[in-house]
Image (cartoon, rainbow, N blue to C red; front, side, top):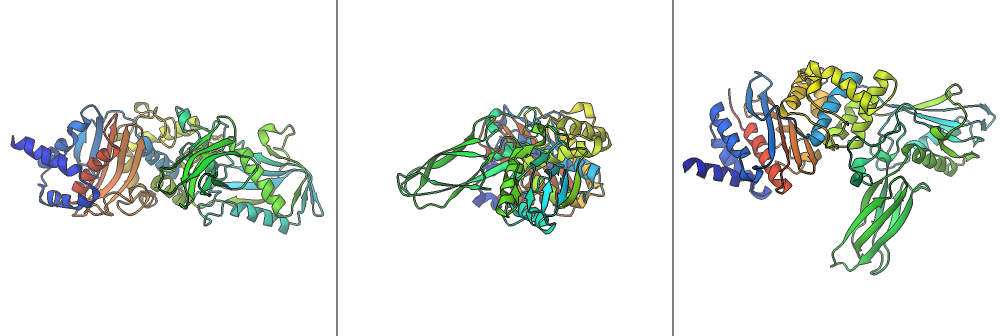
Length: 497
């Protein structure tokens, strides 16, 4: 009976609201520190009847002694969701280095005579995911305007040919294996591409009008490539409201529907585009026109170009991204799927000459044995973890974390992870607890999956790697998060020295 009472107390603690979360420290500060008792505590938490039909995979290891503090179904293959990004970013650092920068080449075919480019303007992409407003104070077209200025400074005022997007560094399979068709309209399912603008999305800003009237819709970037069908109605301020987006498959017709309250703030949504390369060059051509550069031809994806451009390319200038050490922060802190898929294909391109997901995964599987992972014993089909076909174990995740802890790139890797209570996808978790800022970990979520893997620093300074993955649960998501947070809190207050 005493064991049952203790069990109920522990479970009750797990499901407290954030306001009461700090009170859990009473439990953690007085709990025993022997491994046997720690393991008993964790067993009671993971045996919560709410997760009776779910599957937990857990592995917790000291990185100083190598000792496993706790293991539960640690070798069971589970869907990791976005925890897979830990392997993708670790591999990116190993293959490309923290100083790696994506490049985009701006050149031409034909010849320049006076102020006229008699030929095509050609943009060669190599997968840069950062051509957006993310690093330019939300100015999505900042880089395009800079490129136009560079052309003007080079004396070019007219282009007799086309604006061609050369995306041959990557394949044209934009979506990951096993991705649901239901996801396609949404930013987290943006297609990858060697030429990409604004995360291959358009920002849709809906602003209320007068009650009963259609909302005002603004596109960022404003462009002629996407077609918006506006079905958003303004309703009284005290009415229920909500807006949905849907892009018709294989097109760039985006329907925005729903209700917005009169007098409310604008609502911003993000819709993916079909054929990112065509989107890229259409918008670029519009920017050139706005800058006063006359383009007689069209905006064309190189796949639709009949003439050969490979042998007739003259470089004008090159654009470079921020270093990979900064890019992986977006992947891990913000859980940005598009960036992760771009990195996976970049690994493939720079190692094999063609950026495909399959080739990128093959390269990653060549180095996982160094991490202590048998490449035949896990399944990886994308770089982001969005697919439900990915399978990896908690112990394999800890192996990645352990390997990176010993890597020359550890600082960059560690700094890319969300900080508990501070930033990224952990900004609102563990804020008012002893775990605040002592946990650096990657979150993961798809339907029925919640994962958390990363590093914990104990009360006496010991660094611990952990992975907690739960699949097939049916209770509210917050219950899985609270249980994971409770384990992190316990680790952060642990004293063993």
